[in-house]
Length: 382
Image 1 (cartoon, rainbow, N blue to C red):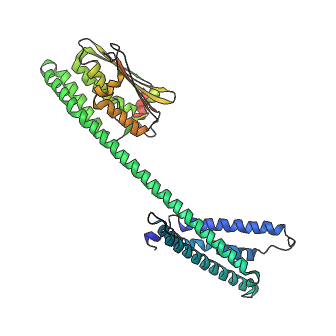
Image 2 (image 1 turned 30 degrees about the horizontal axis):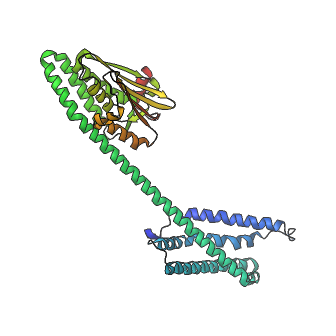
Image 3 (image 1 turned 135 degrees about the vertical axis):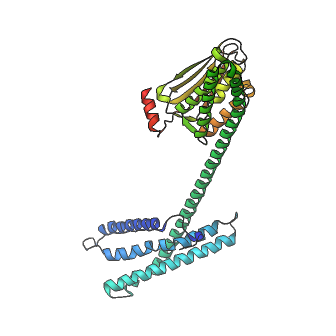
């Protein structure tokens, strides 16, 4: 077993297969050249072609750990000094020379077995050919160094990207937990206050609210740490949330849903609608003495999922102030959408004085790949 710092980022077997491929290509090139030579009428010397090519290429996988270690040492530090370059150049020439000596000895050995003459192969070797062969080995050496450095850089880049994704997921989880912490105290206080006032007036309504808030808390626990859920799950939570609010405000609050069936299994950020619905109640309805309406829509629009929360409240003349007046809720929605979808989303706010307020979200239409058997049955029955 080689120590970790000597292990090549590319497996030896892959280098071996690449060496086999290149050696076969060189043999094919020799065969094509032989076919057009004056000696084409003679049989092609396959044995000698293989002996002169295969050992040279198949030795490189054995040298791979050494070359990788040298390439790592070459890139250490931030500066490439003259001494570092010269020392690595000497090392590369030494490795190329050793490679060529071993390859030549193997070639001579094959020549001895085939022709019974050890030095016969030397007849075809001149000083210039020896120099060219060493130069070829040196070139392959530096090509391997470049491949190793590029692959190693790619691996480190990929690790950094995965680390950034992990950190982004942790940030999303932290924001989701913060949203739930923001929701629980305020919402629970209002709900429990309503329940306490309903106990004497209407025990049935009080029990209904207790049942609904129990479902809400179970939903939050079941969906803990989930960044995305189906729109169907999100709407179950929103419906329970609004049922409680309707019990609080009695007949003054009317809710309208317009959710297309094909969008039910679409993936949406967990609790993305709750802040918008809460703002619609807080700013568009709670201060009114007459009846009010909130409408929630979910449709497919130009290949994207369109989610709309609108009310018929007092509205505003300047929607830019909505992020400021809307508190943490709208900012949280915008930040989560930006982190999840980068530039591939829209959050639009439109309003007119005394003509309501509308929050519109456009996100990618991502169908839920896997869902439970119960969800399939419920979807089929709708």
